[in-house]
Length: 444
Ligand code: SF4
Image 1 (cartoon, rainbow, N blue to C red):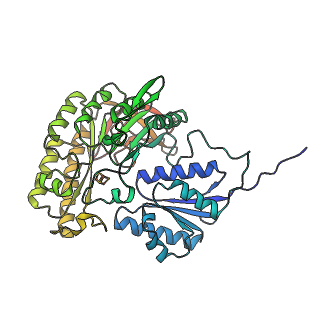
Image 2: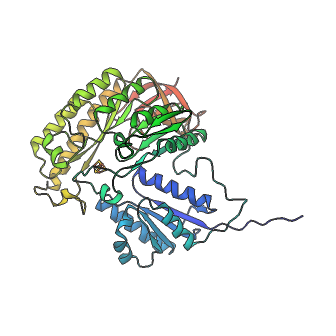
Image 3: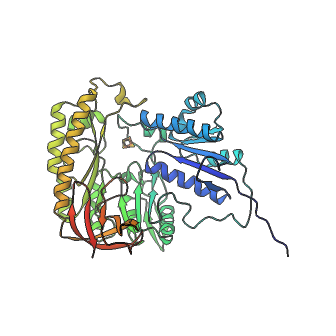
């Protein structure tokens, strides 16, 4: 009998930094490498080459990226760098001349080629398989779905358009095929991400493609509806409050899309928004939110805000707090303005002193915690659906999320007497308590 001895595949270590979009890039790269016959290494020592996917959004993120590269060089020595910081290849090469290759964001072919050069693949028809949904770095039951790259806006504090270029939307049929595979492989929640989800398809002039015997337009509403028909939770991130977002709200009423909108408002004061050069800077936003909530009363709105933007006065900040009281947003993340090299806001006059930024940050966080606590307290006694993320066998408890909670950034639902559950289960739970950000309950 002839027995074929399988060659040992080369092993790749991965350090993935940055936002969910960078995580999706890492997933794509690793999926391709797995398809090419590579194994993953959980540590530096076992890796033939280490891939560092960097983030270059803020100066602090750049420093973190450089530190990660330095650690990989020290621990392993054979390092390929990719991601947003790859745009600054000179900085990386000056500091780490031993780096094998530096590639930029979305240069999937280049980064895969660099790994091939550093540790050539050993082809084998027996092992060159990849799971239907690709190799995922998030848990099996939720998946990020990237629908476009880049951004047509030029917000004064942001260098993403410089790093990633103008908006390039994916074809809707390709997105839907990917989503279908993910759902077939066990995904219970699709997290739609991009720099500007409401602008999806603008670059394609909202052209339609054939899909399941009909057509689907490259438009946020059509895409959201078709995603909703796949049977998983669909959560929309990075939505700007353009008028056409009104058309997505009925899809929430129909149960096709989660009653959740992640809208990065960043500020409320008209003068700050103007200096920030924010899109959809519209005085009617509060009215629009009221209309949405009239249609979908359990709509959860999350947003992020920058405090201490150059020129922000106490009056501007007070306007923001009053606006938040009025808007009653469910989830709020705040950031102190950070000057980023290359962003126009960095060179603006009237930079706000650090201690003022900190004081405003503390005030906005305190206000948003109070609003959140009030809203969560009203859920005590209700029964809600919870998607289980983790089960603690020792305590018999489980942690999950309601429809109002995105992973990593929002609150959690802590369940007692839930040891029989598994990650990915969706259960009904009765809510027994609440704090500033989380709910506590028991499976129903
Ligand atoms: S909308 Fe503004 S903040 Fe968001 S990626 Fe585009 S330029 Fe940056």
